[in-house]
Structure formats: C-alpha cells, structure tokens
Amino acid sequence: MSERDLAVQRLVIPQILETNAYHVQNAKGYIKLDAMENPFIWPPEMKAEWADIAANTDVNRYPDPEASGVKSLLKQALPIPEAASVVLGNGSDELIQLLAMLVGKPGAKIYSPMPSFVMYRAIASSLGLDFISSPLNDDFSLNIDATLNVIANEQPELLFIAWPNNPTGQLYPVDDLIAIIECAEGLVVIDEAYMPFASDTFLHRVMSYPNVLVMGTLSKVGLAGLRLGFLAGPSEWCDQINKIRLPYNIGVLTQAAAEFALSHFDVLKAQTVEIKKQREMLAEQLAKYPGFEVYPSQANFILVRSNGKGAQEVFDSLKQHNILIKTLHGTHPLLDNCLRITVSSEQENKMLLDALSRIFC
Image 1 (tube, rainbow, N blue to C red):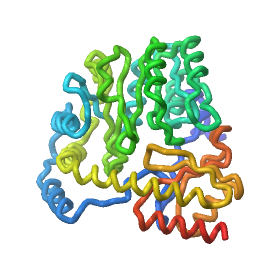
Image 2: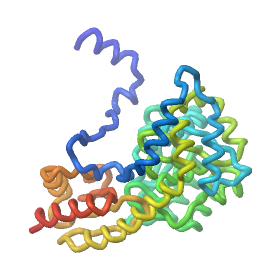
Image 3: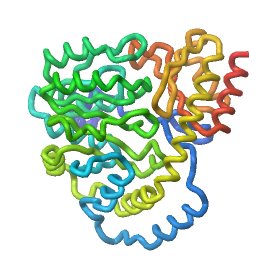
C-alpha cells in the first residue's frame, strides 16, 4: 500500500471508505430508458426564446441567494399553499443531505420502507447516521402494520416516504401516510419526485401537520439537466434548513432556465400527459411477453419482473439492441429479477417493444 493509500485509510471516515460511489451507466449511443427522464425536447420557438434569455444572462455576478423568482413561479405552477415556505436544492439529493444534516445528532435514525430511493440510505451512511427500514409487501404495497411498528419502537428523527415510490411506482393510500405522520415524532418528508405523473399530491395538505415537508423536483418534467429540487412546508422547518444550505447553491443560469420553463409550464404539462398515455399503452404491451409480471405505476417508469428469462439476460440482450434500462436484480430481496423501464416517446417505446419481440421470439 502506497503512502497516499495509507493517508487515505487514516484520514477518511470509515463509513465512506466502506461505501461505493453511486454508479451511472454510460449511455452514449443508447436509447436511454434507465433514468426516468422526459424524452421530449422544447419546441423550436421555445428554444429560440431561451437562447436569447441565456445570451443576456449575466454570469459574472452571483445569483439571487433566495432564487425568489423561481419560488414564485413554482407556487403558480404547483399546488403549493401560499402560506408554505420553499427551499431549493441542487436536485433533491442535496435536500436529502441537508435534511439528514439538520437532524444528524449522535444516535439519530433515518427511516424509509424498502425498497425505495437508494439515496436515503446512502446519505445516511455517509453522515454516520443509522438507517432503519421495514420491508414492503411482496406486491410492493406498503406494509402499514410493519411500518407503524418500526416507527413506534424506534421513533426515527427523519422519515422519507417516496410517493409514488421509486423503483416500484406505487402510490400508497393517503390514510396510510396520515397514520405514519400521526405515529411519528420525527420529521416526515413526503418525496414526490414523480408527482407530475401521479393521481394525487400531498402538497395541499402540507400545512396541516407540524412535522411534514413535501419534497419535489423539476427533473422528471423535462428539466433533469438543471438539477433543481424543492422542499415546501412550514417556515419553522425551512428557516432551519436555510441555515445550513450553502449560499448561492442555485446558479444564475439554472434560475433563469427554471423561471423560463415554469413560465411555459403548459408545454411541460402537455408532455407529462403524453407520457402518462404512453405509460398505459406500454404496460399493456409489456404484459404480453412471456414471464413478464408488470406492476401498476403512477410514475414515469414501469417495474417488471422477468419470471422467464432472468433480468440480467433481458438487460444484456437489450443493450445489444442499443437500449439501456435499469436492472434491479440483487439490490433488494423483493426486487429479484426486476427491471425498471422508463416510459418514453411512442417511437422509443416501439423500438423497445420491437427489441423485446426479437429477444423473446
């Protein structure tokens, strides 16, 4: 071991030494159905208008530290209560980290039912916090009895409920969310990353409880490259988060692009309507392949269990057809032989189905 390796081993905290970096697949040259991105680009007239705005945006000055324009337009585009405060982050990942830091006193616990978004556990581990969970039911519905039992016994400081859940697409019953909130003494964060594709949102309820925040992102509606997430809820919580949020975390160009996109939110909403339409068509077609068990989804992806050909075999075969999806096999016992497929445009969905037809012929 070199001197440099020895220094790293001596100075880096153990939980980071024992952790692997988050892996992102190389997607160059592939039809990208692995990351829940909106496949649609802006119309030419929007692109031209944005190019003019970008050209006249001064990047020699620091951005508005509060991103006031973005927050105002978010409240116009989404059902965020007027009385709610908003905190913006560099994607929801930064907000998860800030929330964990906020409550991260020695012995603090973070909870989420599993399987769910991997960054809850990853960020807890990187900060030296205990991560606790309870398993979902075999059909990926919420096991509310197990959930409430863990919360009552452990009383974690921070709870994340992904709604709809990633990677399963389930939208748990509202009554179950309320039961969790009423049982928990800690801060409950309803993660609505996939809100645009779901039949319900908790945003209009967020001010009704003392220990609830709703988290969202603009990534799934076509702005993944901006990395812009938000938290909405009572000012008592948001004021404390702002104390540890780094200044100027939302850059000038990100703010300008977000304001522009939110002022054209009707275009983005029309794209989400098309994606939801494609989701139903794609789910119906996927269910026709032998051994495919398709789970209901209220997100912009579909979870499939491949009971015939193994998940890895299907994944590898699709890569040979230049199509990239996400294999979840091995990430959690409940996800044995599961694949997550992003819902895309009609053209790309057809290319996926054609490739699967050749694989299963």
